[in-house]
Image 1 (cartoon, one colour):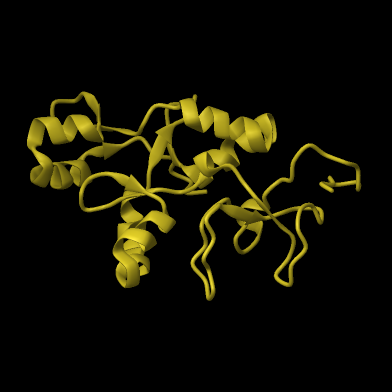
Image 2: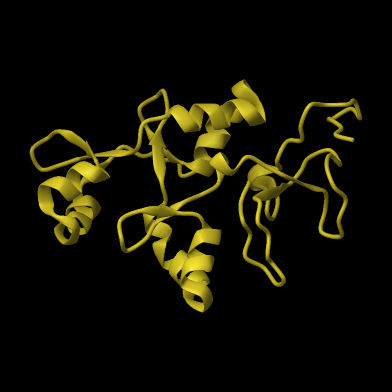
Length: 177
């Protein structure tokens, strides 16, 4: 049974977010981690009981993704599945290339920042829908225009795109939630 803040029955659980370990929806790297579905630690004793705290499966659309060397986004599970023993290391190295999307304020947020920005107003399911429909991050190129990653690749080529993307002006949240 799913329960809310006052013990009432609720439609779904709410992830703890940044207030706890494994508080965001994801495929978490830890000893014995073999999950096929993303999950998070939940608030208010909602979901499934476990030694580390209550948890529940969550929407895979709200999972962090990072850009790999091939220029595509992958979840931590996909890094682990594809790169096997090097997956965790490569995942860590890709931290600078977290997927970001534009919120209504035209700032680019990581998936966790995006959740924190919207969850109070839209709820746990609503923020995921907002993320799903949001435009990808854009950066300001030397010509003064804003472009998505794919535009950088198209204009500069795959190898040069990385350097140009890194040096381009970002429209990210400056408070790094």
